[in-house]
Length: 405
Image (cartoon, rainbow, N blue to C red; front, side):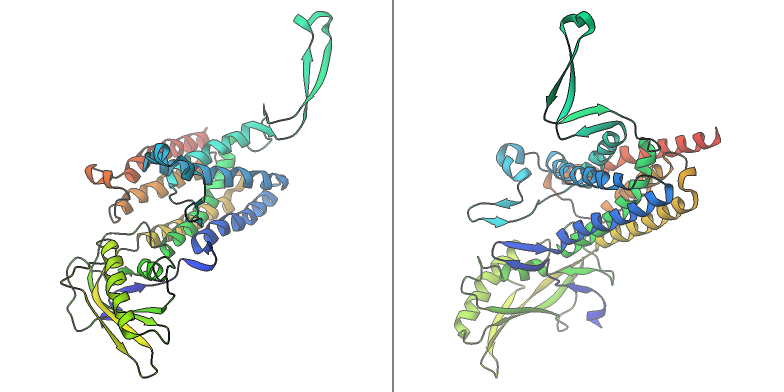
C-alpha cells in the first residue's frame, strides 16, 4: 500500500543532450506557450476583425518582455548580488570553465507581469521602427519656411494609437494567453523539480528524486561512465517518518564489466555526497539513516542499493498549473461571449485577482526560494502579489463603472 500513498518523480528534465547543449522540457514548454497562444491570438483577431499582421508584432513584444522582465525581476527581487558578483550571467544562457549551456536560471513571474504590462502600453501607444526613416529638418529658426529631408538609420519611437486596440483592450486579450502560457511554464518547473512545496503526509505528496539521478549521471561525477540506470522503490520494511519522510531504496545499476569494489566505492562516496547536498530539500540523508551495499547479479552486472529517506512534498507547481488552466478557460469563455462588447479592463482585473490572489495562498504551501525570505512575515512572492491584487480590484471596479455609464 505504501506505493499508493505518495508519488516518486524521477522524470528527466532533459529531452535530449548533445555535448554541452541540452534541450530541456522547461524550454520546450516555454516555447510551446508562445507558439500555441500565437495561433489563439490569430483566431481572436479574425473574430474581432482586427489586422492579423499585428499578431506577429504582438508576439515579438511579448517574447522580449517576458524573458527580459522575468529574468531581471528574479535578479532584482531575489538575487541582487548577481549584479555585482556575476553580471554576465544575468542575460547569458551559458557558463564558462567549462563551457556549458544552462539557460536563464531564475525567472520571476512578477517581473514578467510588470514588463508585459509596459510592453503592451508601448504596443498600443507607440510605433517603434528599426530601419531608415525620413526626418524633417527645418532651416535656422524656420527662416523662409525651408524644409530639408535627411535619411537616418536607427530606432525610431513615435506616438501612434492603434485603431480599435486601446491599452486595456489589448491587455484584456493578452492575459488570456498569459494564463495558458503560465500553466505550461509551471509544468516545466515540475519537470525541473524546482519551486517545490512544503513536506506533506498527504497521499498526493511527491518525492522529487530526479535531481539525484541527474547529478549521479552527470559526466563530471560519473567520469568513468559506469552508471547504467537509477531506480527508486519504496522501502516497505521501514515505517514512514513524520513530516513527509519516506523510506526509499535507491538501486544504482552499473554497466557490465564494472568491478563490485569500484561500484560500491562509487555509490558510497558519490552517493552519500550527493544525498548530503540534496538534503533536506529532497532527501533526509545522514550517516546513521543511510546504508549502502553492492551485489553482483547472475548476469555479471553489479547493482548498488542505497537505503535512505526521501521527502514527500506538495506539488506546488501543479497546483499553480491547474489554477492557470482554470483561469484560461474562464477568461476565454468570457471573451467568447462578449468579444468587442467586453468592458475595458474586465479580464485584466479578473486575471490579477485570480492569479496573484492564489499565488499568495499557494506560497503558504511552498518553500522559500532564497534564505532572506525566512526572516520576513510574508515571502517575496506574497509581498509582490499584494499590490497586483489591489490593482486588479481597482481595475475590475473601474470596468463595472464603465459598463454602467
